[in-house]
Each structure stands twice: as structure tokens, then as C-alpha cells.
Image (cartoon, rainbow, N blue to C red; front, side):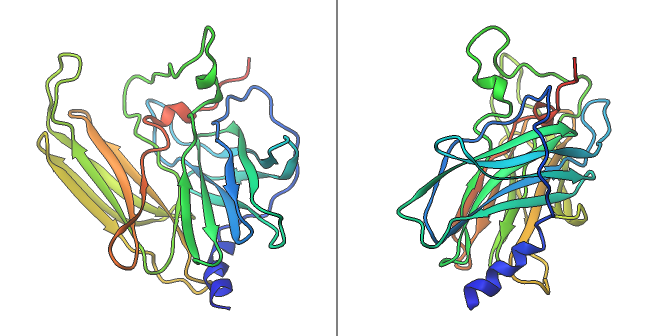
Length: 283
């Protein structure tokens, strides 16, 4: 019963979904296969980025979500339609009587907006997230070894901040954003001071905590947020966000600590630049 109560909070993060055909002209992020056991649930989270990238303001996000098995069969599929700042979780539970372990491949096909995806694995016995996955590549074309492959995306002028996806915390966990001002030359360019802002959003896009940093090269600053109390359960989705200003190279990372204070999960940005999630224009 305790496990069921702990997992009930995630239901508030799940949106209603409907089956829709695949979208054309898409260059979606690529996820690797995930192996699950019968006590686990896989969640594909999507956050609609809420900040300007280059000259482009944030816009609504829509697209299709699905889970495949190792043979390519679609196990479950649905759609998302989000305003900037909103997040949703799309989940698939492994049948408790599943024989052995099950391989699941998460898949997202963006149609519009800067949709930042992540995958989490919840364990019903542990009553918490035990695995967090960013995309294996920001875009599927990054896996193309031929002409045109790679991550050549550029926005000028800045800002074009790093992108983090939503992470789910239990009531005894804390999220910590660490920002380090890089202290070494890069291609002959000497290190400079780093300034910027850090925000934490909830799944609806509200800012629940914020701060700023002003660091000399080599310095690091940490920001922390605990899950706000909820009536629906003890699992809460939080979206970390860093907005660097022109100057030095601010290197961010997110840690989720457990009840004993140890690091349970370490999360790098889903992509070094949010423009890598920009949906290509239709041709």
C-alpha cells in the first residue's frame, strides 16, 4: 500500500493521450533501449522549453510519443500538446507476470516547439526513480555517418542555453544544480567570468525557486530545491533551467540526493544547446 501511495503522485503528471499518425519532416531525438523488470514503470517525459533561443521566442510544443519492443512492435503510443513551460509524463508499466526482463525503446516524434525529452524508470518496490536517461543524441541525424550528419546547429545571436528535461523526485529527495565557471583556454580563448540565472520549474511551468550566479573562472556555485508538498502523493516533477549570460563558459549539472544525503542521480544537460531540439522547418 505504501508503494501504491508513493506512486500515486506521478499520476498528476500524466496527461490524456490519443493515438495519432507519425509526423513528417521530423528529426527526432534518439533514445537507446531500456531493460525493465516486472516491478518497474518507464516514463517518457516531455518539457516544452520556456525561454528564448536566439531571436526566437518560446512556442507551443506538439508531437507523438511511443514505446517499442525489441522487435519494433508499438507497445503504446499517444500525443502531447503543451504550452511553453508545461511538462507531461507518458508511461508504460511492465506486467507483473512478465517472464524475465523486457526491452523497451522510447520514441518521441516532435511536430512543433522545442520539446525536451527524458526517460525515467520507476521501481515500485523501491518507490522511487532508479534510472534517468537523456537522449542518446539530440537529433536522429546525429547518427548519420554520411554527408549532412552530425550536430551542426547554430543560433546567432545568443542566448541559446543548455536544455534540461523534467526529473521526478520523491518527498525525501533534493535537487541540486551545480554551475562551474570553466577555468581553461578553449581554442586560444582565455577563460572569463561567468554570470547567469538558475530556475526550477514545476510541471505546469511555474517557477518554484530561482537564483543567480557571478563566478570567477574555476569557481562553482550550487542551488537547491526540495519538492513542494503535494496532496496527490509524494512524487513531484521538477524542471531545472540555467540561463547563462554572455561571457565565460558556465558548465551546469544536476544532482538528486537521497534521504541520507548521498547522490542518487547525476544528470547532465539533455543537449548542450536548446537549439538542438528545434524542429526542422517543413520543406
